[in-house]
Length: 253
Image (cartoon, rainbow, N blue to C red; front, side, top):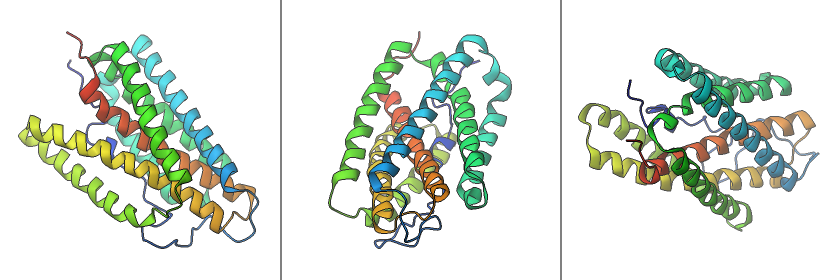
């Protein structure tokens, strides 16, 4: 069976609903209050730590599935995609009612399931080119994250345009399933890279602004913001990586 080079199909562009708001002004976050128990650097450090944990888990799951469960994508691809979407929706809409432990468990579960779906790229591309693309994606992500962290600007106003662009490429991707236009696929990937680089800077800036302006009332609230932020940045990075892989990945013969 030929494996799709994009293991998410069109769901890799799915983005968790923005609980932080996308307008040009800072909106009240359901997780934040006025008595800060942590600073912005501590929050961002933990966000990146949990994002790294998620990526590490996904990498292990992907490589393990490729080595020991090579046929899993033949029978379980659609169920895994559905589980992914359910977990993202649970984290996005149910986080406020969940305990910190439950939030972390859902994030870890999502990372595992996503890793299983990512295993399909090893059937399409040479492993060497996958790792090279990963490090290039990491460099691009890092530059965008650093800009979001250190810029003096509030990037909230760009969120609306980025989300509009995201919905645009989702619609274009769905259309291209039926027309199979290679040029359109090229443009979707190219524009998608730009959008998710922008979203990376926006998400980091958003976390920084909320941590700085509002603070976090309790450790539990801080932990929930960390998991939500980690999920957002995880999705940003994965999408940058997968779209870059279309350009830089060396296909197997």
